[in-house]
Length: 203
Image 1 (cartoon, rainbow, N blue to C red):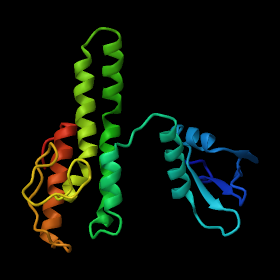
Image 2: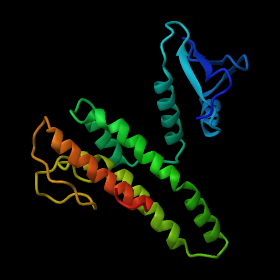
Image 3: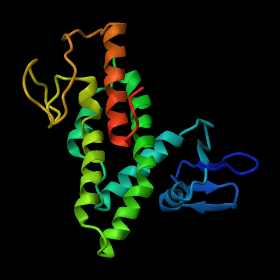
């Protein structure tokens, strides 16, 4: 995100749930903060009473608000799998992997916009855009499955050896405390999938 010369803008949240933008000396709403995110305006949110950094929870609130408006970007299967990793031994790897996958998705953004414009102009069939969207969505929906091969497409547990998901998944021993070698193997598998989706040559 872009930063101002003096650093991120400070937003204070008061007990009455009102949000105060210290840069503009005015109260703002979650919609305002959502627009700031889209404009790459960096900000941090502090609890006005305790001084705690509550940026993460406020950003989560924005996502909940946007999802409630009808444009659902988070598949139910993905949400179930994500919840399942809270408290899991692999939970610490999830933020890094999701950040990496979102960066990969963003790198395809211009290509996707170009395909959409061309499709609407009648220059290329919609199938090109559909295929790219399917690849990216498949990547996100299978992100959690790479970590845990014992979850099905609907987020429910599966027995080892059962079929679940479109992408091949590494074979793991049902060990609650995976070894370092197993973790390295899974990370390598994830990198291979990223390379395939972004068109980069394998390292």
